[in-house]
Image (cartoon, rainbow over all chains, first blue to last red; front, top):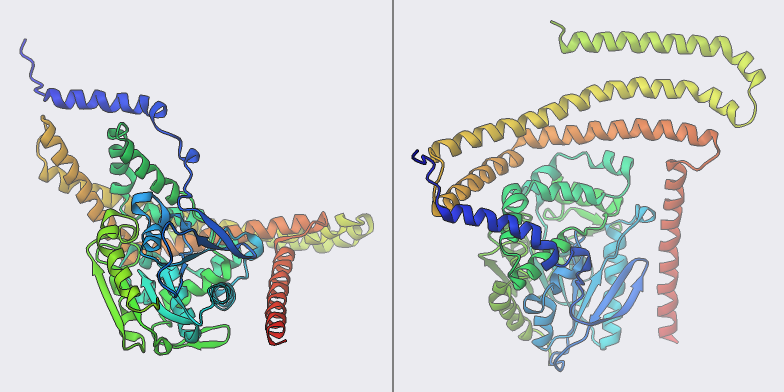
Length: 356
Length: 190
């Protein structure tokens, strides 16, 4: 009898190989929990409540007088900026001769429910900046903020312009009303007052839900198929597991801060209208007169360029640069592309504006 | 066929009926109950009505939650069907070689990704999602409230009590930080 089912033998062998990989994977691949995400060595230079200021150890001699303080985002942990030796944002800046500090926000608990924008900006960031100014004996520091950290850094620069030499805003969340991502759509429809009143801090589980509706098929299905196909590729597995582990660890966001965030940035967009109050003070983006470098990614599905770019046009700075990169939210900071294009450009820009 | 309005009306009626009798029984029995109940249980006897009220109101919010949840899954399922139809048109036959299989997988993922992203980005999804979360929060509130009633009778701190502590601690931390900063600048001046 003639066999009517004409299936390419390659499909059959691929199918068996895939199944074999699933069975063999635990023997070949470490569990995500066994992976250490700490890469570049650092000292904890300053602590306050749960916040730590990390001072990275430079492999090269410091060549520029003005140190950089990085305000990491409130979502996930700071490790993405130092995720892999070949893709480390921190290491790249260090090797360009800069002194690098990073603010790790820690893991807020129920007791931190009432921490607000004011506490983060006028408290934690200000204290970290003062510490670095004192330690490095400089009047001003360069401040970089990534994602939601970009918003905090922007607000800080507007309220304390005399302490900031250069501002670098990497995918900052600025004008939420213009944001075209799924995150923006969900944020606009959430009754955030009710949420915080009832559950306190924004739970990580809510963030995981939001992650799950971003590219659900590429990120939820295809990514894992590719992982099991490539379990024999050590480099691929290492990269994959590091990013996965990073994605799976997001701390809660203090209720009061989350409330102001959603209302002022996404629902009412008061920051871009120069109508946001932090610690009783009006935040005017026109007060940002220091050199500013805004970095956005065309393929950013978490913070769309329409949400970040208004910062460039709203500040009072005369020395301002806007770069739009053909990559995504994470690709801009932790990829081969960022090492080859984004970081050299940033380094050059900073070198020209940091005293030797 | 019973409509949503009929259902709400009958729920209203049962709510009224239940509250009427709870109130009546409470009024009729409160004096003798006050005689017999003492200590924490006395508080429980006083607050027992609150539990009934919360349960009835939770039932109402459960209806809203179920409506929103059904709409949520309907939107997902409609989008799935629509995307699958598009895929079926694009890939009429089952691929029988590796290259076609890869291409089909790509088409499937791209089409589903596109349709689902459009859904998650839409106002109708955002609105329903917001209401779904709100109704879930209302249910949580009833649960918290019932639990607080029970905790109060056992003399255990409730969520509200802890919130007061967190608020007080936050204010104290702020004051200490301000004092430390002032002390630091005073020492710098010396």
